[in-house]
Length: 163
Image (tube, rainbow, N blue to C red; front, top):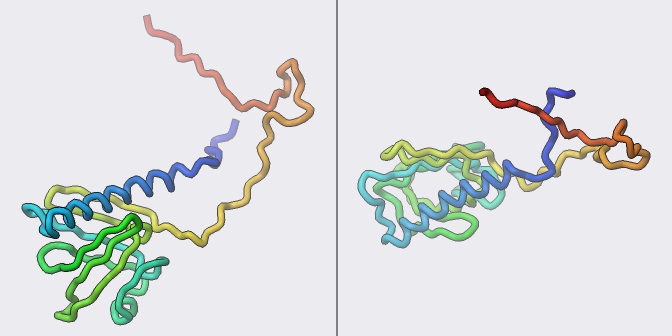
């Protein structure tokens, strides 16, 4: 028996990441519906990959933050717009206004320190091809009906009952 966990053919990590990013979209969408005012003491730190596909930021910010950048949505932001794939917002950097467009797939962290809420994400890299894998070896030709080499990898564990 091997100690290695087999690679899943179902992309569970991607599915979970996508669902958690939808939380960010819903929160930002509710802020837009509420008139772009943050309720109470809520404020957001959003970290994203500046070089990710679809990110649009001014060149001076991309130069200053070539890999990753954190923005704060608190008091001074404007034109917050949320779409299915991302959001755009106006912010000021050293008194210079800037418009940023950020796809949800570029976000690596979302934090609301007012309520100790935070999410961490893996940056999505659309250009990555899935790793090649070997064909499955179970249920292949030549398996014997007596079960001596049936190719299955099911293990039965009997924990028993305490009486």
